[in-house]
Length: 378
Image (cartoon, rainbow, N blue to C red; front, side, top):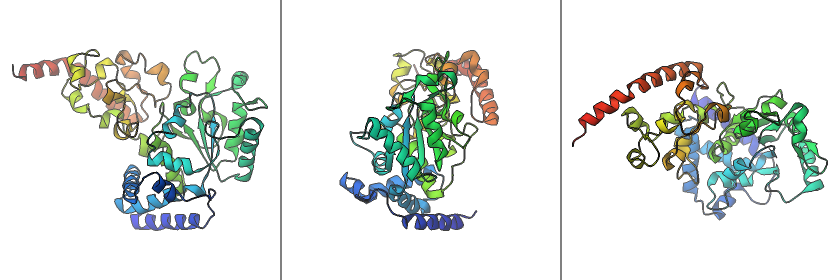
């Protein structure tokens, strides 16, 4: 499809959406941003960044901005299962909220146990009412792994002691789109780690509908809000990798855009935490960085208002956006070593190429380092 044709199609979709009534009628998204000190210039700059993430031309920036302004037309149900609430915390910042979190705050969040005022019977009623009222129209976001089978009693929610698996099934049945937020909901996470005493399963185990996985422990706020924007803009689910992760967010390895990549290529490695290499920003591969095997955009998006991320802070990636990372990526501060040949990469072709490259690199590290040392001035 030509970009001009796509632009017209997306414009028509937003025109139709704009004619619908806002669910949040107190104030528009633009007013919320202005009240929190976000200028129109800053907002458009943010929209430009999101446009680039979606791999769209810069000319689409006004459409992305408009989609963000229409998020108050979208009802969202957010369920908590077996989790630590870290994924919600990634969004619900109380200090210096970002544009992403402000927009998410203003979405019609019909049910979210952490932030809603209702509790007990009232909360349960709110959930049932939202599922019925917005049947076929709401976005479902689920955080946390879900105990299954004969062990599903390990997770009960609400005054009726309803099982988490029942909540997930009922909410998924009426959803227009379903997102598994965080690694626990996407792949089971720490709850599903061996020996998995509660038989925790990912959200996809409980519905036959497509589930978009947004893994990470936690995922960045941009990866969460970006999927909502994508749905508003396109009205369809994004292109996915073999683990149902959106390619716009999880299409590259951590290693590909890491600021320490040049050190890796030069054979300059941290041998142990606190050594001279660590002080000089050398590559963390030898002390366990799993960046070469992990698909995510942390090295580009970062955390805490985009100021830093684990590798920048001095600790290697632990591979938290990959399936079964608790079991397959450990020990976290050691190289994968013999596990190198059992990578859990999302792309089979890229996986084979990556393994070959890393194998050759590993074999050449010592020689490369020795040559580099010889070339250094005394």
